[in-house]
Length: 253
Length: 281
Image (tube, rainbow over all chains, first blue to last red):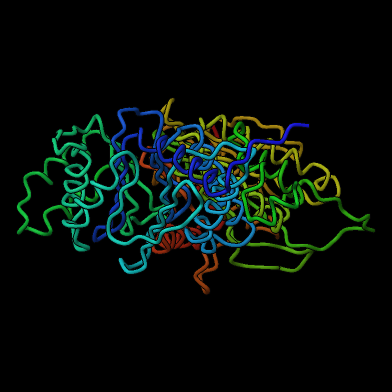
């Protein structure tokens, strides 16, 4: 019997992490940021059919970057987990923290089991609360760790640079239009400092809106509503804070 | 392996298997004990006294459909509950009203709502109205074993068909047999009287307001002749639940709105106890 070629555990994990990170870095980014009335999700995604941002439950949404088939599987798993939990207990007992834990365990087990290919995904699970201080945003990197985030967070290809840009400019009291403008500006920045202008057709935008009367707070901002919101964000001077408020009640999904 | 995946807290394989968009199918494979139809009943002697819900009526009008139910649950000759709710939104464009074993019916509605929501979230699109009606059919069929032991659930499903742009009504029998009803329908113990009343009151060109009044009249007549159907309780301010579904979606009439209609009908019935009269020829 031949002796297997020895690879130190450190090296094996570093290789797997490197593999996953490279896969994630190839994709375009997603940014998630808090604004006065909820949490905004913006992805650069020209596809209308393959979503990077989706609804999980009443107050919980999911955003992901990386390999589509892998995060789509995790999304479906999350919807099943949430619906089953809500059915067995109560709708209020489904929390982002519980879901993030399950995702972390799943990603962590896959990452460290030698027989499986590590998932090339990075997830965000966010829950909108009754007040801004109750909002929760969790970032789940490929290795199964959980990072509790506040304010604004970016994942995907250029996330470091976008994250820095967001951190410097994000305020908790932004209106939806202001937050969207900041998100779009940040996504338009590329590695070597250049800027692109992203149009409504290249964006996937959704919000968890705490002011929504329905039980399900998730809403996609589509078509004309998105164009109007982008325009009002661009026109808005930093001085006027509430001009975006009436734009929040844009058309339903 | 199974024990291992559980101990790590990782999502079990059933959660991550792609394929079905149905929450029922998922429950069936992962946790069949949670499905109402998956339970076996011990043999029982004679009738079991459990709360039963009674009369549900529905009527279409140009642009939508009205679904309404009385508020009584009976247990043999006892009124088990006088303010039970038997009409529920199924999703944004449909509603379901249930007659039969109250406990099972409420559970079935909860599961049906979840089934539609689950499909919508997984697929990113809503089911067609026929698709929803068929899912309900499957659920009732799953309950056939219990129905034959006396625990039947018989719903009435109404919704606005966004493709055909009109309101539609589906009625069911205990075996899950589904049939589309044109104009109006009723189910439950008082349904015979309610259907008789609606037959004389219904016209194709009713306005929304008139359709609402007609179904409340029908419930009034059902309560008049069927002891298991509750009439409007003016003293306790318990009125029938009336829901309207149009292209704007599901709407439940507010307490004030419902009270006004009931009071108007009641006032007229003080003069004419049998309600409005149709012409003989």
